[in-house]
Length: 438
Image (cartoon, rainbow, N blue to C red; front, side):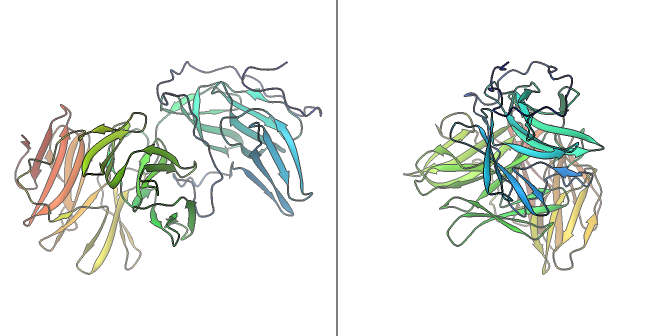
């Protein structure tokens, strides 16, 4: 009997495993992707390791399952059915189904299981030995990962409401917190896109190759992966919903973006400069200059709007001498700062490769600035702003803020601009208190 969303598999071989309890899932309202599109999860290229750096994964799913003498590779056919290619025989098999996402395969209990998102936005799976397609329910837009852990098979996915969920084969969906570069339980936070992104205990660095294609280098493995595309601008990367989004200007002068695991998508526009990409709470905001130096902005799901989303910096009396960054050169050496597994500040010394624990419990990207022979690090925690130096411990600068907008050096001062919970822009230095920007 066919289930809605996927046709029955075209295999007729005997089932070898029955999985119980497939119909549990709380209702998820479709508010994340307005047009119901699903992100396609593509093959993970060499050098891209798991963002969270999980050390307890026994195996993670992908579009390929390797054996000693070959591999099985899974892709979508012309009717979006799953096609399995066996390198040992050179033959392809049709596994049926109709998927909105690329298939993810994994070995489990002496079987190879294949997962994907069906037309009803539920999670579906089958096996390569004839087990037909079955629904695990849910309303999801992207499969983040499939992995085995403690003899259980776990699926992590993003719901149509933008939240992250996980489940096993026999237990229903449960909401989960983001685990990128910070422990569970911390509130969501905002950040500004840069060419480097902190992930777990390392960095992903994005840059252009010789053909102006996007390349990413993982500091944890030293490997570089080609993510394709042709960009006229340097890439800007930002973490978003357990993934990383990378933005740039295409050859048609439109803004394009992609994630680590999905292909390029156009945001349109007639752009001469990609000014800024910011994550504000759960929204990604892109600001760009169109031809004629006309400012425009938009988020992922809406159209371009003339003007700026807010005018937090136009009335600042401070001159920006240098912007703070997660990587900063100081007294002949280069330091990188990122959040540790317990939310503490970690610092990597680029010259010697040492990692130092600078303590604290922060929930925003640390921003560093070299001022007057001292290295300052500014971060947000519990809606307040804190700073420290290499020699002095954390100091509380107060505030009741939504996110830090930017940090910079001005005439020997460290200046912090932030957006308050009231949506109003505020500014202060490490010496002078918060002032509302008019």
